[in-house]
Each structure stands twice: as C-alpha cells, then as structure tokens.
Amino acid sequence: MTWNDKLNETRQGLRNLNGAIPDTTRAFSAMGKTVKDGGTLDFKTKEFIALGISIAVRCEPCISLHVEALVKAGATREELGDVLAMSIQMGGGPAMMYAAKALECYDELTG
Image (tube, rainbow, N blue to C red; front, side):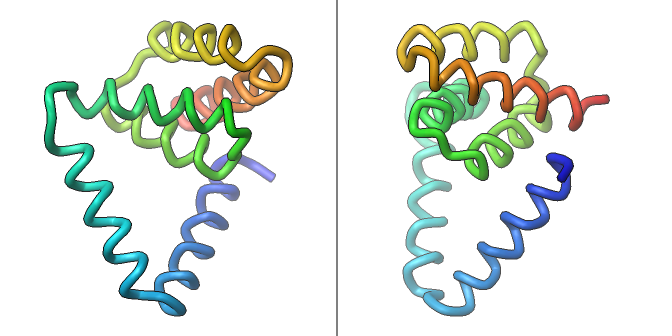
C-alpha cells in the first residue's frame, strides 16, 4: 500500500468518524485550527513538532497527515531529517523505525 493509499484510507476513516460523532470531530478540528493558527511558532514548526510526536507514539496515520502538511508548507528533506533525528534521539529504536516510515512517505509525496 502506498502512502497516498494510506492517506486516502485515513481520510475515509475520518469522514466515517465525522458522520458518527460530528460534534466531537468539529470541536477537535476547531481546537486544531486554533492551535495551528495562534501562538508564536509558525505553522511549519508546529507541524514538525506534531510529526515528532507522531513518530514517538507510533501513529502511522498521523505521520502521513503531518508529512503531507509539511510538504504543502514547503518543508525540505533536510529539515525533515533534523526532525527525524531528534525523534530518534528521544524515542530510541522504535522511533527509528517510524522515522524511516516518515522519510519514505516524504519521498513518495514529493517524488
């Protein structure tokens, strides 16, 4: 399964969840928008943080969504590499395996 397939599958799952619990998903989306639009850090930096957390908690759907957001925000492969290295340092061996997935996703979405 490609990363684009995984993104489509994740989006479909989120649409299904939206249909089942619309008030909760709208509230969560509003919180995400507020967090990403407000504050001192720029959007791209916040997405890098979210990617690092996604790797640390081993959430493959989260990795694909945040890598996609970073690609759209103009993140470079080198910037991504810095975040992956930091994620590995914080999360050890398991984080290294998910960092590899994040790099694979980036390469597919930019290739």
